[in-house]
Image: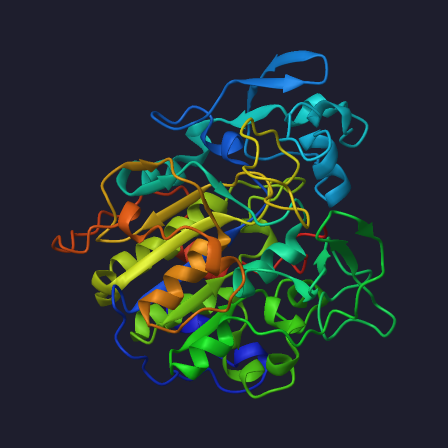
Amino acid sequence: MLSSCGGGASGSAPFLPLPPSPKGKYVDHIVILVQENRTFDNLFATFPGADGTRVGKTHDGTRRLREADLFSPLNPRNRYVFWKTDCHRTGDGPCRMDGFDTVPVGNSPGTYVYEYVNPAQIKPYWALAQQYVLADHFFQPQGSGSFTAHQDLIRGATDVDPNHSIIDLPTSTPWGCDAPNGTVTSLITNNNRYELNQGPFPCLSYRTLRDLLDAGSVSWRYYSPDVRLPSGAVWAAFDAIHAVRYGSEWSTNQVSPEKKIFTEIQRGTLPGVSWVIPDYNNSDHAGRSGDTGPSWVAQVVNAIGESPAWDRTAIVILWDDWGGWYDHVPPPGPQRAGGLGFRVPLIVVSPFAKDGYVAHAQYSYGSILRFVEDNWDLGRLGTSDQSAADFVPDFFDFNRKARPFQPVTTRYSLEYFLRQPPSGKPVDDD
């Protein structure tokens, strides 16, 4: 079945193995699985030992969170203006976290977002959290949507000059160098002044992890839905990086469709660093049909766990932004340039991860970048990687023997995903 994942990378050059990377200090492979638009409370409100809640604050009191399906027919709002409303802070004070009910969802009142997913519908996520590490104070860098979140996962920031950072989404799709002429972005200043549509064309020259990885001869790939479709290019973060989009790595390191990750695992050619972006149908995004996201993630984990790569791999699973759902924990520190944003879940899977451990310390996307940098002694980008906490001492015990992998039971099989046609839809449009 895995042979069906062959073909050209990004629909052009042959899908060939990259040169091997140097051995990492901790592991040889770091795989970053990026799901969509969920808060910690939305997925893990009732997880034992975690900082969850069944009661949410409203503008005039409290409200019990209702148990709900993973499938959500409505899509809550999650741009910066709605983050500010949800946060509801005064001056430089902390977020009160009591404005969520004042943002309507479709024709429904804002109370729609006061819910948590029935654990029975996300068993693979809970099974992974129960076996490995779940972080319950992991924050997205900005109170914004998916475009900047995906940039943060390759750069750790979206600053375009000393006082301005890109926020929200470009005015047209695709979100990157392939955008139509006249496309612009929005900015936020360090003191949180929002500048709508005052930002540059979304084809950027700032450094990313790619620069450090290439300099250290560490192989990397970014797996996303088909970039030949507008829906796919929305979700290829490196489409917004000029040096990649107009260089040879667009054909070799940008790989579509995303399920080619299974080919790499089977061949034993998994790169040093992988970013894996799901098809819309498997993304956990609200407003879509289906419940396949947890099985998609678990099948990637299972494929790695049952391969020789398991003993030298760390898998990082996260959700890119809060998606408009309620969360009760305010972002720490003063909010500058729209961040930190709200909590999102983080699960780290590895034969060296602590057993069934809930990490309560504060981390952010910069912690992931720092893990990659430190694993191969790459130095620092000097963005959020510089200030974010190092989660290695908290999450891992590299003095232990690599423990055997226990497959995660799923509702949908690997064959289901290999045969699944692409949706042709962008993973997110906000």
